Image 1 (cartoon, protein in one colour):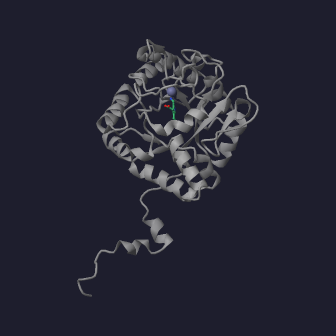
Image 2 (cartoon, rainbow, N blue to C red):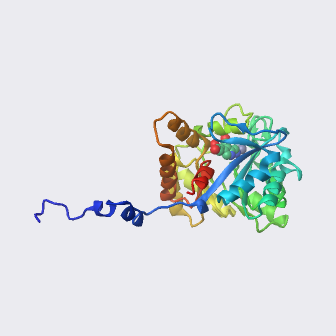
Image 3 (cartoon, helix red, strand yellow):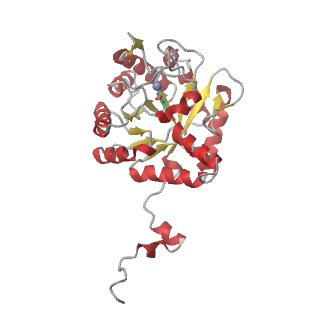
Length: 324
Ligand code: PBG
Ligand code: ZN
């Protein structure tokens, strides 16, 4: 054989499907996926979310049945977002023992005790101005919001939430929540920090999903998408404050950040494939431009390959129904 032919031939391991799957480096399963859901109070029917084809707001009265359906399909964990009809300037419904945050956790855990319930911990769906905290002198007041985050986390834990997931992007929120939980006797309840959360245009459809009242933006508290060093710093700060797991959000356009944090920390790392990422795939497929199933699998596989252990995705139920 003359030396003009290659000695190394990677194609040898790609010749058929069996070889390819034997040598595949990255895989995901239902054990890695968390399904985010939207639950609205005081409505009777499911409400389709136009900017997220296939996703509905769930009436609170139907939540138990939905959780049972997810469990039957093999979903292991959900993240709850409430669509509230009780807005005020601070989002005080979130820390009432009979408020929507507490009721969602209680209903879901009563329906399927082994379903891991992650409680999104923020205020933007419960405030009349739509910001993620208390507004004072035209700014979101960090430290007043910390006090309220602690109250909400304790209420959610009391209602049975397994994991508190603070998404308000306030400085010190993990420490404040850890202290509040421990003082209330919930030292066993974990914190999944939205530790590196960018002020992303990809949250657009979520605002419709949650019926957000926000005018303006969240750039004074969420991160500048152009900052890589700061992204690592934010997650390491949350680790120091006592986070049990970290998160990068959004996911697909931030694979470099996922890899950086994977290498900088030994904590479990999650990534959130957000509403805009979902919408781009759905509408692209509806237009006939891409194959939805293949793009979903490629996008989630890439997020895992980048270093995420867990992925929050609105496609989780589709995958579960497909048998993964
Ligand atoms: C609010 C929150 C947002 C998302 C999760 N929690 C929106 C925002 O920060 O503006 C986005 C989720 C998505 O787009 O899928 N704290
Ligand atoms: Zn918020």
